[in-house]
Image (cartoon, rainbow, N blue to C red):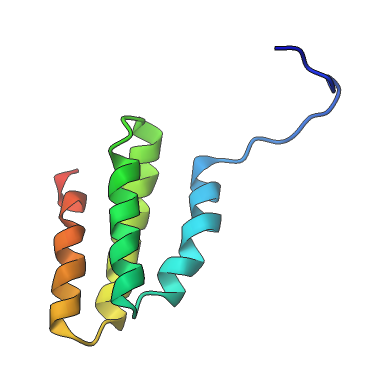
Length: 93
């Protein structure tokens, strides 16, 4: 592959920064909505399953944070149990 702009440099963005930018606000602001909390756990589970060790580590970290936020925000026990069930994969590491 040829490079058209060989003098342009872009600093590398860390995986952790990308996850922080993409997921923190969603997890924080959506923690009280079962639909958001559940979908985030499904997304993190998919990212953990990619086979990339760095991705797994960061996705697990964010999955645990999202679960903690949901535990603080969800009022209905049944909703919280759904999210906890979806987040069971976070106990495997």
